[in-house]
Length: 451
Ligand code: ARG
Image (tube, rainbow, N blue to C red; front, top):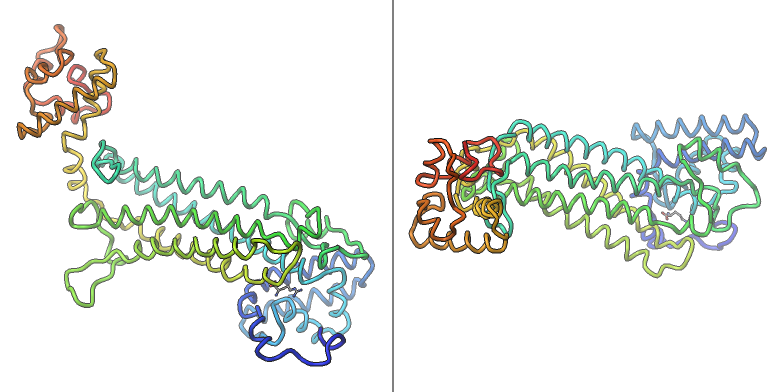
């Protein structure tokens, strides 16, 4: 490529500094698919013969097999995957290979390869998220009736079921799948035909290339198409959000696996021991996942920063997008794999969860809502129950052990309907809350409605 324009070869240090093949070799499959489709369009336009097209395709498929079997020799003095493959092609078939780059530049070629890569990874990671959701759903089904405290501010708030918690995770990952689908729509655009920046005087059937490669649209502006990496930024953002969700899930599980909570245990297969303290069972998989979110954010940030104030169309800066992109996709793939395997093996300690959830204070809100149903404005009911909670603490009584007569001194709305059954007449003296717990739907249970 240099020999006509330059008198001297590139400095070895400059070559080493600027090569990208050590990273972008991973794009070979997309590069080859793009070249095969491009050759078909060149043949349709009469630039190469049908025979040349066939030769190009055969040789590219052979090269692909060589790469896959690890026999291909990557030459670092040839900048990138595109030049390596083209050089290998020309070495194999001579002049016909030299015709392949007609009406194409590495600028639209690399944009194409990246779009194909992101499309493929997007599909694989979405499928991975679906498997993870299935694992969460299975776990929820197994523990559908396990009650635990729900927390806000990490303080016990209201009782929930463990399955309620797990379904919340499924919702968050559902938004990730949806976001990826949306990002996929803007990735699904063929940039080939844009050339270096201004297209080409040789007009190719871009719709044909798009069809061959499975793109649903072609790009509209060549300047934009070679310099656009929005789809990379968006994809990295989607993956950063996946990481965010995993970090929160990890944190909850880590916390709940402590002796202080004792709500669950990671299986041996997903725990590590300590080299010093023999008793330790460390939740390293969840901890590593929590921290991998940092690199997912970092990759997004570094790519946004590469793009900032970049002059229009292609600039070599764009070569720096790959490391971040590959790293985020690989990271999320690994996280999904570990969590999908680890979740079914979680040991849930129902007793510990339910003991924590049976703190009567967790039903203070239900009690306030009971008063609302009796006609109290909610703010007033809130205050009455607040005072009751303070009284219970001072009297060193659990909230559900306060006698009905005492409760009535806080509000006359705590009363029994005359027409209540024999059983109901006990409610206030013993524990309205125990009845609530026995009933199938805790939320609607109040002293009067408990059976
Ligand atoms: N290695 C380059 C990259 O990854 C390919 C495009 C190079 N184009 C150029 N004009 N140097 O971005």
